[in-house]
Length: 401
Image 1 (tube, rainbow, N blue to C red):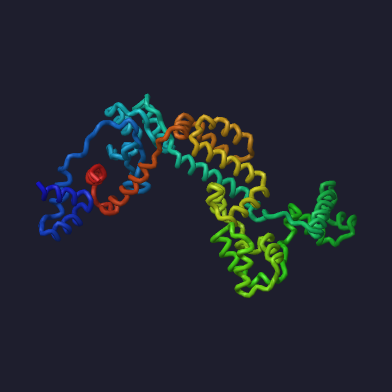
Image 2: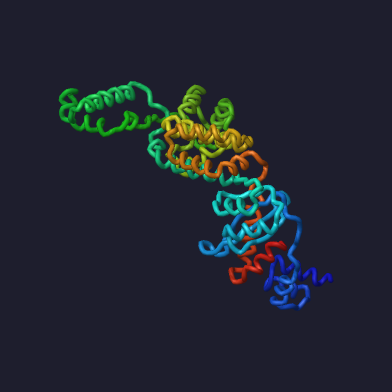
């Protein structure tokens, strides 16, 4: 009995050839086919139909064949593995196993329809991770559509040169709006033709303003040290920084260091973030971002009204999701409709099509999180089998593991 139990355990985890190799090390000479035969003879675990069921698909052969995995969303117990992801297969299983009260799923329309037909009294719960992922996709489309804002955003330039540039830009575009040509503008203003053309081509005066060119200061040799210290300890007092760089040879004043820090010259170099990086900043908790990225984001958002509205909608949806305020979803959708954010409109339309499940997902404590962990373990089993074994063996290993 003990030997049979040992063989069964090795049959489930390492399976055929690997199980036979381990048994040979234990002086048990047995072939891999015998190990697999014993594995297939083991009875599949049985238990009551769970009140809260989690449903998801996984690839048998990516892009070609998929199967459906069912687990208990509360205890994480494997319930069954279906050979495909067709609605009819899931409908038949649900009808044969009555008693399911809640079903957690992703946004699959096929699964939604199968649950409506197979378990009409069950509450469908749309997974929160998939909702957040769908919002991230809409946010990325919006960021890409307004990519110009990433390159022009930043602190508004001040000073006599900046104000003179803005005044000249306004003069040129006022004349252009009146129907004058570039040559007529040049004669009217008394400027060179190329100067007028340069102002006319710029969509805004800020496009003509170059970043300030700071002169060399006594703080420059210690810039890397200041950047490293500010990254390690964002709230470090200036007096501590002053003492540290003075130990390294700094001879300037405290006021010079304060002005240097206030100008942002010790911040990391600010290149325009890629769309995905900006999306990650928008989708992150502000407190989880480093101080320099948080400041950079605070400069980017006000530069574009669309990004300002987008950031507000993301924060509002995050509050609804984390605080389980599904009853506020209608108000959020109404607010989104009033914004000029087409990608977010499409996301909101998708929420409305699956509204009851979305509200349940934003209200109830259940999610597809346990299913994602189980899918990770299934991938390990698949890799051990190298795609050569059949569905029956994979199903047996999933249910017994």
